[in-house]
Amino acid sequence: MYGLAYVLIPSQFASLQAELDRTLAPFMRGGEQDFPREKLAFDDATDALTQLHRASFRYNPDGSLTWLDPADVSYDLCLTSLEEHLAACALDEFEGTFAEIEPDFDAFVRRFTRFPAPDGTTGRYGCWLNPIGYWDWWELGGRFNGVITGERRPAAAEQAISSGPSRGRMVMGRLGAALGASEDGRQAEIEANVELVETLSAATERNERHSRPTALVLPIGTCADADRWLDNVEWHEIRPGTRRFLGASAGADYASLVRAAYARFAHHAAAGVAYHF
Image (cartoon, rainbow, N blue to C red):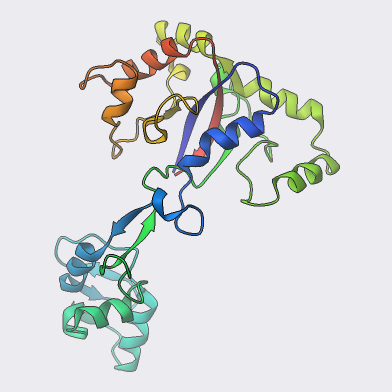
């Protein structure tokens, strides 16, 4: 899924790329390869795997699964392993549970899911993830090119400012310039996707739709990183610390919180960033 985040930054900056990189870095999705362990939380999949082990399903001749009782279809399931097992049994269809195929739960997890063993620290199945990981990648403008300034434009084929690969940012920048990403093009991209917060605040009073993005990211260093991200995604809860920082009540809705943030940071700028989550 895609969202539009307004990232609050100082109104004067030497490099928009650098400002966005450091402001958004804590919210990257990732695990132990990306963050130190102390920044991560264990995402426990054991209960979901137990439910999957017991869930009734039908394996159809076309290779699809039909769930026969309420169950979350787990992306942890390795369908290929099931196909190989049924083929070895000369079965092109099956109705039952994984517990019938493999009664031992730990053996089932090893054979039919992506977890080769329990976690060494917790003794349970799962993985360590960034608990405030909200984006897979981002780019300035992108599919929301120009929205923040109220003048939506076609998305550029490739945005000059983005999360890009995790390594080689400077090399990538030099390569982009060599391939024709001109300074004029970069400047036009910035002008279309950066707005003064006080202008956005005025737009909220006129109830203009573009003033309320999917997510708002508060400036780096103003409060705990976990409290700097607030969004309107239905399965995300806005943290109590965010509400306290903005002086909002426990029942304040997202639109009220956005207005409070705009008032708090009226002398900042905001960059419109398309992000995938």
